[in-house]
Structures are given as structure tokens and as C-alpha cells.
Length: 201
Image (cartoon, rainbow, N blue to C red):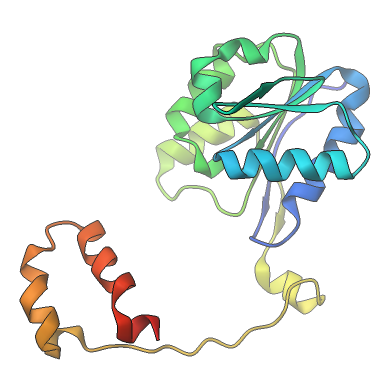
């Protein structure tokens, strides 16, 4: 089959899962396909989409379900533990490739998956730091496709939106004064903010 190595950048809600299913139909003839996603819920969603589009021999591999098939959807975490999933694979498609640690992605695709001739990465955005960005490009190939959210809105694929910013002056709220000293890390701050009744309302 062909030897492909490329990255596509398309923003949230642009239909990357369906595009990936189309790529699987294209590469199906060349041998086994491995699809890698960052989370278990995306494994289930991706498998269901592929099967709904007429490819029933699509299995998955993660902690609760281990049914690999001609097309297998898995997570980075599972692939790290079971690199044998690369065995006999001719095409690897990495969805949301920014969601994996770039060092892990690089190591997996250049060691256990080094023999896979066809590599395709899809993401909405690449990491900002040079090392992570170049690790992803080195493992998957150059960026050959970009579609920005604004372009998708202009053609009517994504809904146009208006953004209204509501800014709370936290420093002047007495209850904030009582808790902010305990916010040693960002996660402490965000937990408090996201549970605040006024903000939720």
C-alpha cells in the first residue's frame, strides 16, 4: 500500500471522527488499522461511528473491553501497556494527537510502531512548546491540512456565536477573601470557582 505520514489540523466540531472513518475506508484495503484516542469515552464513540458507517469489524481495546479486530480503537494508556497492538498494523490514525504526551507518542511510534508505514494524525491544535510540537510532527509527519473554526463558520458548517464575558471581581467578594489563601495551585482555585453558586447561576 501507499506510505503516508501527515497531520491534519481541524477544530472542535469539524467532524474529525467522521473524517477518520473515511480514512479507514480508504486504508482498509492495505491491512489492519489502529486508531488511537486519548480517552475511553472517545474509544466507545469512535468505534460506534465506524460501525455505523458500515465497517462492522471494528473492535476496541481498553481496560473494560478488550476485543481487537481488523480495525482496533484504543487509548494511549492501553497502547503503552500493550504495544503488541501494533502487530501486523499497516495504518495508525491518531485522533486528538495533542492529547497524548508528545514524548510517549514519539517513543511508541518510533519504537513499537516503527514498522507502520501509514501514519495520520488529527487534532484541533498542536502544543505550543517546540519540543512537543516537533515530536508529534516527527512521529506522524508534516501538517498537510488546516481548517480553522472561522472558516467552518463562514461556510455554515459551524454555528456562528456571540460571546458575552461575565467577569466577577473576586478580590472584592468577602467569601473569596476567606478561601483564596488556601489556593496553593490552579486546581484549587478552579474547583472553588466552578462550584460557586453565583457563577453556576
